[in-house]
Amino acid sequence: MVHVLKNYLRILEQKRVFQSPVSLLIIVTSTIFVSEFLVMVYLSKLPSPYIWAEAIFDSLLLIGLLFPVLYFFMFRPLKTQIDKLVDTNRQLQIEIIERKKAEEALQESEKRLRHLSSKLLTAQEWERRRISMELHDELGQALSVLKLRLSYIGRKLTEDQGALRGECDNSLQYIDQVIENVRRLSRDLSPSILVDLGLTAALKRLADEFVKHHPVRISLDVENIEPLLPEKNQIVLYRIFQEALTNIGKYARANKVTLIAKQQDGMISFLIEDDGKGFDVREFVLRDGAEKGMGVAAMGERVWMLGGTLDLKSQEGKGTQIRFSIPIEGEVS
Image 1 (spheres, rainbow, N blue to C red):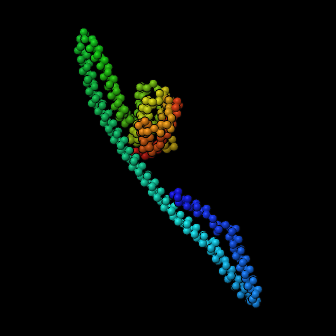
Image 2: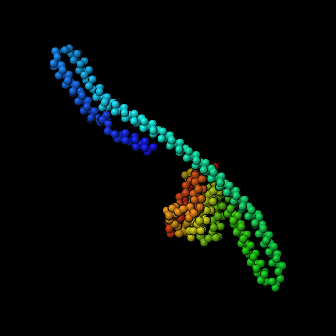
Image 3: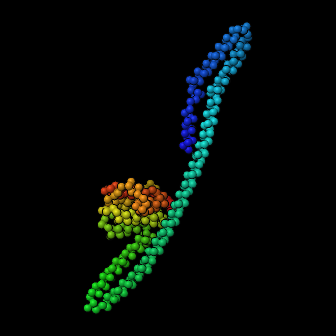
């Protein structure tokens, strides 16, 4: 395309006599002057002819001299340039058609990639749900039985077995902690509240759980957007917020976190912001995959699947801000 455009511009910039009115005027008037001069010289040497004979002779001589001049200086260069422009235009049309085909192929490829990514995430969610159920039903139940048996053993211990009774009590407390961790892991893997009550309630629960384990305040401003989103999209959005809070808990050292979700202009806009230590975005982008980690990449991939783009802003000592918007219509295919 660039090569064809350069040829097109070069043709337009070439010096062409027929494009200069002054040059053409000089050539035509000079030709007329020469023809008239020759006619007058020739007629002066001949006996006086009839007027009509002079007119015919004058006209024929003028045509004979003017036609070659106009042809060689105007029409032939004009035809040559027109042929070049037609050829260039044909090449441009071919380039445009090929570019459109390439764009259509790219769009189709992106569509297939989104579809495959959606299928992969759907499979991941089903696997998360299966593991969550096994943790809750199998491991949770086994820990509860173990706690009951240990409690029974503790009650059977005599007064002179105080040290053993203390160990038994400590073990019971530890089992309680393990049971709570299993429940938390089960909720994180597949939050039933997301299916039962929707995204807003699930994000509120997520924020409450985050505050329990991190010394941070969370400002949550989420409109009732569940009717605008299919269940698949709500799960994807929940994972984005979950990943963002995980990163904040690990790295940000923040005192305050802001979570916002609002509808505006046919889009749903989201904001995840913290006042933590921040980082250099340019340096972060230049890291290789292992050093960069999968958190931000996973969030960007999920936002892209929903038809949006993720905007990440951060500065050392001034916190981090993540913004993205997705269209209301459409579901993850």
